[in-house]
Length: 324
Image 1 (tube, rainbow, N blue to C red):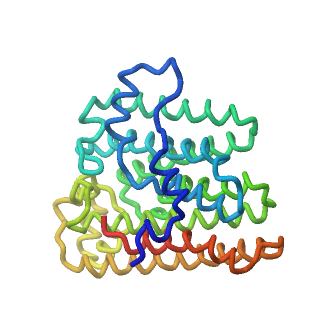
Image 2: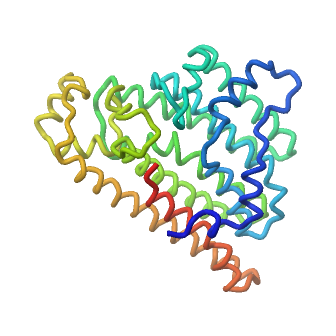
């Protein structure tokens, strides 16, 4: 498989590598900045800013114009990780102690809140209210997704539709902003911006489904079976329950998920989820083709359009094939 160094343009890899995620505000307490730098702002693939840069490049925008947007979306993602680590009682993140372990639950929440406020402040300085409104909606979606998931844990009323709804709020909303901003900042018409948004939405849903499968991969840096321990039914666990009707009924009647768990037919459940993720990626590919048709109609050479689309197609393949 082609690797990042071959598939992603060098200028974007350089942007990602040099991305400064420090908090610029002079009012930021040094301890807040320090704990963030050691945890949720450290490491990671920077997939979200990469999507932002790649979509902007697809539209032939000056890449530097996307710097504040790429940084903002990565900081929103980091804030959501800080909050998630508290909610999930996590102990590690990316193979290192999670922020709630490094500091405390209270400080982890406050640090995440500070990041979100810093993002809104940064974007408000760009002079475009719609960008702030769109980001505010993403932040609302992140909170709503966590709330709905908490309700689902208590009510034990999971469905495929509900799990995809949670994935939309918690994951796809962020990625759809990444791809929307690339088109919007380039001045694309609303219909094309929505195609870019839908691309990110579908990629985000597929990403979350594949992420769910990583709970069952020995190469994962996640806490092993953390969702099972926390009583969270993700897309793979739901399919596993459906494959075990008696266990599903016991779960709905109040038996803990962890006590019911075994690995019987888990590979079958994983395969079902992977197939569904591929369906979302197929739709994402259709969105890219629609954008390509628009760009060609605006005078971009077809070969150039395909060249600019190729890194986005690589990201799609990477998400489906990743194992960590």
